[in-house]
Figure 1 (tube, chains in turn yellow, cyan):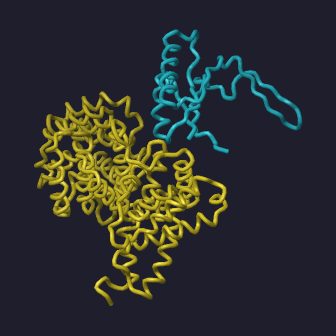
Figure 2: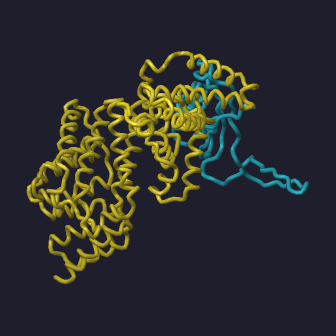
Figure 3: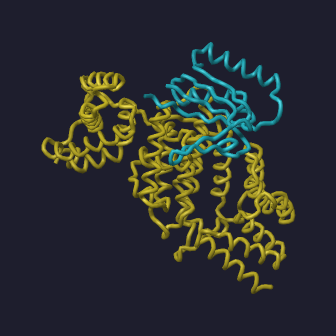
Length: 415
Length: 109
């Protein structure tokens, strides 16, 4: 056994660590997602055999890149397009040139930022952006993504095939945009990562383990993005995900029932992750470019600071929601501010603020859950019971539903 | 790469001179940048006739293909480096401000 470990182990390690990096370079050189994926799979199959015989190479990622490029050249040569198509002939010549260089001595370039921006291009549907990002950057299989999003393999496969076809056929560029477009495009990337995180976070542990894994993938993506492009808002998103994820162990009880933050056992919070997230957030806020993800992370950080629910600095949270409302006005943000205002400045003020968005949030489950809670606190029990019933009827998550039913039975017993 | 920008707008009465001017300026900009290939404005959708042939019989229908609030009112063919450039151009078409521009790559044969 060498100091690198057994070849298969090295290969598994390289695959986890470097596959998306190698793929990102291949796509850049081949300008074709499918061809790049096929060529990389060929190269991996080749490595399994070759590395058992010769031991792992010094620079495994570079080895895979070189091998994959050779396999891609073979595939292009075999296809009829290469003979008739001038562009394909030019591409072949370029690829053969690149193959001459001795890459094993150099670190391979990192094109993953271009890959992220392309997969999250706003000309693709949001569902397609999420699926393609999980497929190409996280290396999840189509089946795994289908299971996480509760759709059939065929549906997910078609979604990914279509997205790749649109990138190719509509010529979506493999680029990190420059100039004023960059901010908008970065925001699309951040939204995709946060969507992936929330999909995992909304799921409870027992329901589907694959979905909880989405949080891990999202945080990994967030780290990668921040490492490649340390924009304060990318840092804000990463801090937000870390702070939320730190509470994972306290969010459900042993019966898999949802526990709201006010009733969580705070000793179960992951303090190391909270410290990391808070430190990152302070560094980002120090750059004086506050934006929605940084503000949301700040709210989460204030919650994390409190040793007990009663110690929560609600006036500060209410102020932060006010800032968030100014940055991105939406009835949902106002709903959250109303809850904070109720804690900070009294239930009556919170209920009054809630009333201002009642029409906009008609049929929105969290509105009725919040309203029920505030009504209960102000002693309006029969109104509270009605609101709980609305919230229960609209609930789609089993754990949350069970929690609300329990709450309602508590007040009907009181009344 | 060639893209077609299909301009969908509501048809609200007389076209005003400001809109004409804005289209003129956009077209000039595209010509100056070497992006413009061609483009036309269409008459209102009440002039449209849909034609289909089934079993050798030609059927006609009065009106546009789809009865929607926003109707195809014109198009540009633009030569762009990639979809990002095409989207940037489409966003400058005056009709984008109150209607919708559909951007489609032209099939290269």
